[in-house]
Length: 440
Ligand code: CMC
Image (cartoon, rainbow, N blue to C red; front, top):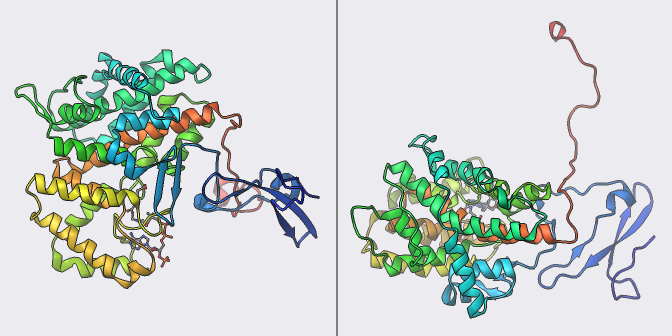
């Protein structure tokens, strides 16, 4: 039995699976990808052969069609809607990239002004939401606050919860992008016991965020252009990254038709882990743990030891196997920021640069293609700019909200919209009889 392939009379666009156990052969269609590997359509595999596929970590599994972001991990290419991350960080700004991710095209002048105005209109949060913060301990991790407060938005904005209504989806999307800096800055201000600062719409998205974080009512505040440019780049570089853990979490949560605020809160929870968004925080923790240059060889040896769980944080990537294009952009930014802040000679940054040099020359890291990823440099920049490490992942979440919102919208409006429901290989007990507690 064969299934037909598109535009190929000879059925070359199929992959045949031979099931030796049951002496059967079944053809599966190969679907063409615009860029990157084509995919085998195995939706009928279970029906045809009675097997599930087995792919823990989904390293060979495409979970959806997407037109938003393309990554070539071998060449080190990252494109959003076809535009390279290098051009976007050089020529665009974060809000325009958010527009591009959501709408598929760069905005015209008129569209840009309307979008910007819409975001500005939604930058404040409900005053009642502000009281939500006082329920948290002052020493709460700001990501814990983010998960709670973003999830709680669904309790405040009832007019944007209906996922079947395009206008409500749009409103929820605008609210999420617009309010995220305000919510994030409030999480920070709360933990340091300073008053919340309201948004200032005449500033850019990034400058406004810096002001809400670092200004106090008693003083004037002028954003430093070198720092806001570096942060803008960090935001653009983190805006979307295809079907990573947190984006897949947002899609999976959304596939059950959960409301958008709950879905984004789920994404934030997933992003928090040290193997994902928590890595730049982990980089700083690691640098502090290493302490000084003479301890580097000891930690490099630990990273190479299979029996030691220690890994060099900020090195390696699941998808990029030669270089991380985002890291290249940030490496230059890191130097600009350190120069601006006269921090080039600070021991922590000297340590980071020495660690980078040693790891890049080490046979183990070369052979396994482990090079500094985006988090290595973003951690260094954010630390120099005065962000506490606990805020690093919050900034990532803020930026990634643009991608999550775009991916969530794409999923909801896709013609193939099914609840996500992976299967498993069961390895537990076979059926057995219950034993009463006094006989166990
Ligand atoms: N330090 C030491 N060894 C490493 C490291 C590292 N950072 N990363 C991978 N390896 C080794 C790993 O032990 C394995 O060795 P072996 O072949 O002997 O078993 C080999 O390299 C391949 O690693 P892997 O675990 O199969 O690779 P992966 O694709 O599953 O892991 C990763 C990717 C990012 C989870 C991992 O490299 C890592 O834990 N890095 C540190 C954490 C980090 O910086 N994460 C941020 C990723 S970038 C942000 C984002 O896009 O979300």
